[in-house]
Image (cartoon, one colour):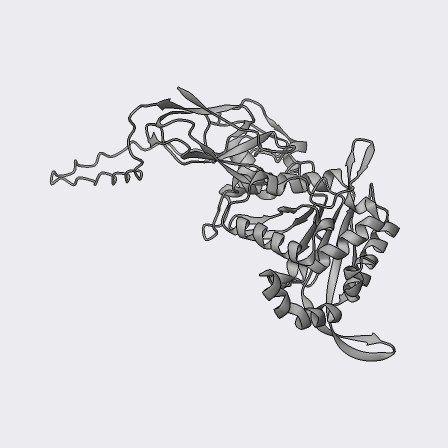
Length: 414
């Protein structure tokens, strides 16, 4: 018998969620054939079979949280298993049988003597009814409810379920709210990965003092540079010259001047990173992921473009590995490819900085006292105010802006 053990999932990841069982108990499996999918807040990992045989046990259901080292199932080596088959369709419900026997003659029910209608319960105390509760509901608790909830309390003799959150202590629970959803609406459970991402985002909001500062960049020089060299660049390096390499180079130069943006807070200590491994947000079938481009300060424009293209291709084809998502020191996200004009990017915790790129729009701007039309982009820097002060954050963004508007500075590292 071979156990299916949750493997090491990478840096700072100690648990995962069982996203899917790819095999049912009794199914035949081959060596290294994926049996289950585990999701972390960073990546989906397939758990392969260590031996050939049949799956004999599933110890955790889909959606369960498991830790590194947990045994989630077992495969019996050499056992003959059945081939995976689609689940059988449910049998149709039995049809009602109608007989030709005549119905029995109705019997008149005895007439009860008229009685006075019952008086409505007083608002001060509502007695419990058939729901089994024996306590009365006091006036103070009743008056905290909405009119509809008070009516329900009078009818059932019990207070409705309460939400546990501090912002709405007397409101309906999530279950009550789901039960009240309009039938025309669609209710879809969050995927395990989406839940974990949500938890991490909330953690970043709670643990980091996140602020955002904005600036705008005249993209004329970069666009002219790309127009002049794009064909030669692609022929020489086999990859297109995009905007991202300019932004990566500019952020590396600015981070060297203002190191708090490329740092991490651990307890009461600030760790200033002397390596520049940037997370670059790319779109994947299951949502946005942020693989890490290592050693950005040591890469040429062509190496940056090739590295980003490789990571994006892995993301699209579901081939990102855990090392591709670990060790980021700073992040860049480009909402402009979706048409975003401006946004406040969320920190990729525990990093202390993230740059947001946006749509390029031609606008009228004043240059040397003349109104001219230029391709402009808003840029945003979200930063952890516990490590980075406002002056440093604004200066970082100005340093990025200056280098993007004079890209020749990036070529001479100035």
